[in-house]
Amino acid sequence: MFRDGVLKGQRILVTGGGTGLGKEMAARFVELGAEVIICGRRKSVCDATAVELADKYGGQVTSYGVDIRNPAAVDEMIEDIFRSAPLTGLVNNAAGNFISRTEDLSPKGFDAVANIVMHGTFYVTHSVGKRWIAAKQKGSVVSIIVTWVFNAGPYVVPSAMSKSAIATMTRSLAVEWGRYGIRLNAIAPGVFPTEGAAKRLRPGEEPGMRTAKVNPMGRVGQMSELQNLATFLLADGCEWLSGETITVDGAQHLVSAGGFYDLREWNDEEWRTARDAIRATNDKDRAARGP
Image (cartoon, rainbow, N blue to C red):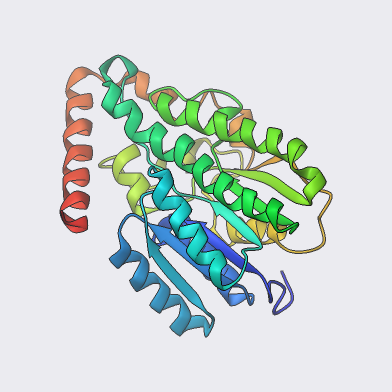
């Protein structure tokens, strides 16, 4: 879809770039000539991804281990990145989510999502944006949100609220920072199955199984479709496009009351089973990260 080297000369940071959608987008950026920086809480995972992508595509990939919930750690990372050369693009992809009846949520459970998705995304965007403004340099921000901002997010209320905040940040900063040549846009993907999301959002199910049944196009998303849209928003050629949220979901949000509306049919036992599966996944991830 794009000419070779279309991102040559660009320097792009992808948060949550070690796995899932972040890794897929980072791979495409490297393939098209960009220098890519990825970050995530599990530095070992990001390091392995950086080596894998650099070996496969022959580009430059740098990795950082950082918890974006910590504003001081975020600013330290961004300062280190800019020390060698400024970024030209930022992809806010890092997120956290799990299904739960809202009446069962604890404040800690709510904060586990909101602190990453809303606070962390702002910390990174603010840290990068203020350096662009100080240097009188233009830049492009692409934030990954959800289609629930258009309809509803039952059983994922912390994510729905936080992603709605990012959509509002995108519009607001597109207006405030437009005079500096800084563009902000968002992508609201439908279901692009990844292992991590499936374990917390549809435990015990084949990823994407339900989507294929209800989607107007009868399928889930293909990674190349998300990669291409993210590339388009970061590449030169659409510099008057700012403040927009673009949905890529086969029109599913137009016929849906929210991606998890069907969970209203679950009984207490099904919710207990789901909670146990999600807890086991979280425990495994914590053990992998280490102390």
